[in-house]
Length: 345
Ligand code: RIB
Ligand code: CA
Image 1 (cartoon, rainbow, N blue to C red):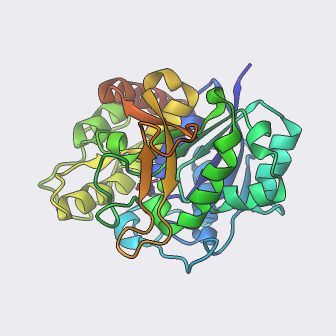
Image 2 (tube, rainbow, N blue to C red; image 1 turned 135 degrees about the vertical axis):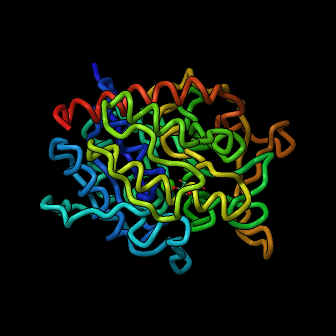
């Protein structure tokens, strides 16, 4: 039995690697993709999702458009991090595939009602559309098999303000509504949270791309070096490798610009790998709240590890993993996938 998955993404460079990871995983059955505004606008996210499915010669997986704005505040996007289209230096032709007539929130609701208890929900962007789905169907936490989210920072600095993480920063009210709704979930269905504490240890470097190109039998294998002229475009023979290289190069340059090194934090594909195999992560239960009223701390996720608030935990927070195991799995799956989709390139 394949694992049924809904992905809710703000594609985004690392979101696209998360989608590739799931598409490349034979044990996953991707039922639908919700396009959430975050890194770029919701329509741009949806276009990126449709175009990525086309690039991957994937089946007609439903792609739904999410809300234009967060629950309570104007949308803030981050083209400086992910590029003008949200996919770094990569450029997609307009996809021939069409967007779903259902909204992102309705897609969540319809799928969990159709497959009660079977679906893993994987969120790698703001939780806006999951929160809207919960308003339509309050039973969603009982109807969803498991929720895995990329977001938050717990005993770790933020990446958007000194204390908050981007996906929460864009829509803090959504995070609060989702985690309040899941507070009643049984212990084995608590949201599994991949925060910056761990995802900032998932550091992709050029050698990972070279290994993936080699696995895909794409040439040339070694295309990216920190001495390259910024914006150099890939000449990889395999179209999926070419896309990945152009997307991730932008991310390498972004992280270097902020003195983090010529590397890229692979937040979202790590969350995808955990969604398919929770055994990759060590977790610790905690009660999580997000600061909504703070001036300098708004959007900060707070974990009560020791039960000081006297409430049951509502989250399992990832506190450990082995990045090398993850990268071996990413390279093997996506490299083999790229070669299978384009065997003659
Ligand atoms: O903070 C990192 C997260 O924000 C990732 O999901 C990235 O894609 C952005 O959405
Ligand atoms: Ca994302």
